[in-house]
Image (cartoon, rainbow, N blue to C red; front, side, top):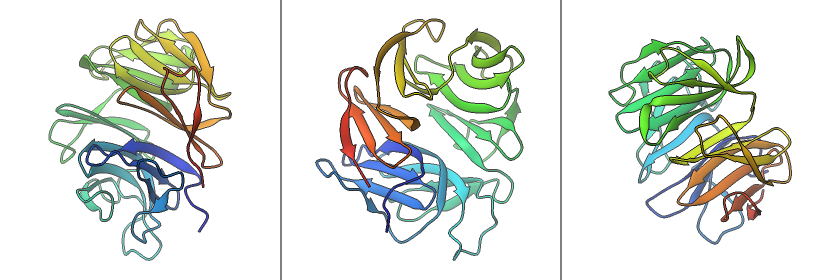
Length: 253
């Protein structure tokens, strides 16, 4: 057991404050105060698009454990028991969501297989397709307006950040910033670039101010309850409690 390496996503369970690490070989959990994350159950499901939407309630996608009798594309999955079991919700065998973003009554998903942006208003049971500025690296939803999106994409104006004010129906170029996004509050949009530099935007992604660095190339970025978390490619999870200025190890494989 190598622990949580090849990380796809991070989440904090509001039921108990535990950190969850979604990886290529399963889901891992580090309770508050624990530096080592332990596997949740025995599944080695490749969990993509991982997001926490409530106490013990998670969404994800990806590819099945080789022992499971499931198609290679898992569509949208839901767990209601803290990741121990998952059930298909929709698009089983049809979609591989690398990004899922939950915003009130809306769920946005980027299906990398079909290279399409989808939106659902019924918790992922049915979907509508929207426009994409280009192949997507990440997506963030304005916490004050679920119709305002930022996407980091290889778009028609070049690689950078694109903005939509109509729920993904149309897009405009916002900045040349490229990286992973976290948007926990109005006026506080974070991006971590490929070099690990973390910057803050107070104007919805038009300009950025450097804050600090995570110490390596980030694989995932999360903002939760005033804290930032970043996963490095060796499976180390680092945390910042001062808006990205300084970072310390939260868990390690």
